[in-house]
Length: 280
Image (cartoon, rainbow, N blue to C red; front, side):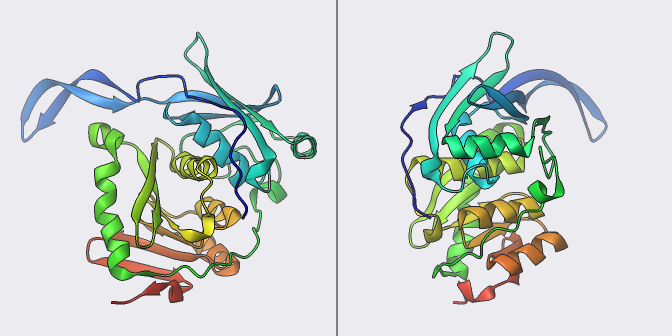
């Protein structure tokens, strides 16, 4: 997929990604009042040329990445060059908005899709108004990418050092972009696993990266829409620390994506297209 740098990118408004609360902690029969660090979760509206499309609950960081990744991975545009501008705003009431400019033909198509709904943190098919919108089958992924078992597990060990918000709160997901021979290049975190992946996709768009040259590592389960997003942007492999669903496995098989699950220390399970993973 041909990449394209954005013409207009406004930095995200600053906002804390976590906050302190006083809690009562019970442990081994002992009760104590302590300070706990919890993740922030805020409403984020994505608007296209002034028209509200979807409202998400997300971690207030890397919002331009979230908007760019969502726009591509949800099929609102077919290529990064059709995203013309991104502007993140923080309103006085504490809500956030990302204003996205896309080409006229893509905007006209978006209006016809009649999608305007609220998305929740754990949702799957967020904002889809019809089955055709939700159950999209992306083109088959074509890539010569391969990686070794040791590279896979090196990335699994390394990702925890990049999960800064999760280290404080223990409640956010991470998605990483990994390039064979180079290791982890980009990590994004969010309370929603779909948002974390979209943030990485958006970061790749803005960095003009080649989607076929690396793979995704996600600290969540591999559900259908996670594989759908992976295939839509042309990434050939996605590895999850938890389980995939049967629906996700079928889509990965159909689209040529290598799907790995239950990736933990000393173990992993390859569900589809195992030829990309080379044993030692």
